[in-house]
Image (cartoon, rainbow, N blue to C red; front, side, top):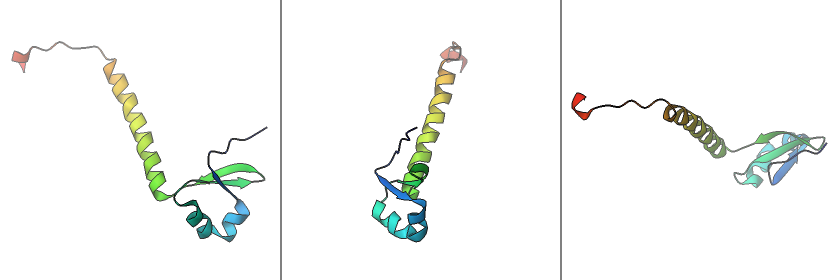
Length: 82
């Protein structure tokens, strides 16, 4: 079974153990796919990228809430009643 690696930069767990900061510096803020026996086991991301991803997740969750509320029944309101 093949695995999809979602990063242009890959390193082994052993390489990460030996030289973690060198790998991080070489990545220049991009994600690093960490492989164990040629299979991705996790991704190492910079704080900026992690914050960006968390913002995207939050935006997606807010979009779902908006979609749910837009599908609710409309209520007619007279401007004079406000």
